[in-house]
Amino acid sequence: MKAILFDLDGTIHDRQTTLQRFLEDQYNKFQNDLAGVDLSAFKEAFVALDQHGYVEKPIVYKELLIQFALDTNLEPALTADYFDRVAQFAVAYPDALETLQELSMSYTLGIVTNGPALLQQQVIEQLGLYWHCQSLVISEAVGLKKPDPAIFEMALAEVEARASETFFVGDHIENDVIGSRNAGLQPVLFGGKQEGVPSFSNWRVLPALAANCKPSEKQREDSSSLLDKDEANT
Image (tube, rainbow, N blue to C red; front, side, top):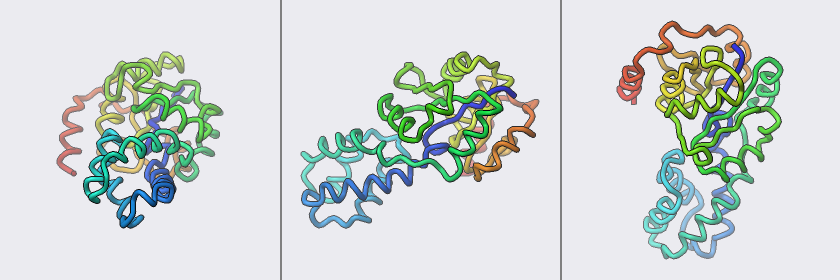
């Protein structure tokens, strides 16, 4: 295999830890406006409403303020603060950055991520990923998003590799596993289990997994059956 492409949030970027760090700081910054709201309740409400980043932040903050019977006019300030500062709190999963450095000696690396262009660029910069990755493809910047095979094909062109000689590492079944498989790449699942898909939870095992992993003969099988299995397990 020649190249490895990665998802960002939930794979390299420990977004949940980042959120916890940021939300505590935001709570302290806006504490006078959040009078009567407990820090733990504030963080729990945000995480629940955020749904792993798939809900627009103005909606998250407006619903949070309604939930605590606070002035919804505070929403624009909270939303702006989120986009201005959350990337400053970004952290990677344990051993991820060291492992990327090791992998970069044997493979061409890249990132394919959904999300706002500026925010994802800031997270990538905060984590120092520009040093490791030849390709950085962000959905908002290119007008495509996972699981569209076209976004994977764009990254393949940038790392100058064929799909058949490229791994895609991600945590999301539909966007990462099914999406990359439909584009002809070999998916690898981080932080979970899925039949027929190599997986890992400890970043330190990834170099050995990549070295020993062979592309599946079923790599191009109908991905809808895989999604059905995932839905049945949720």
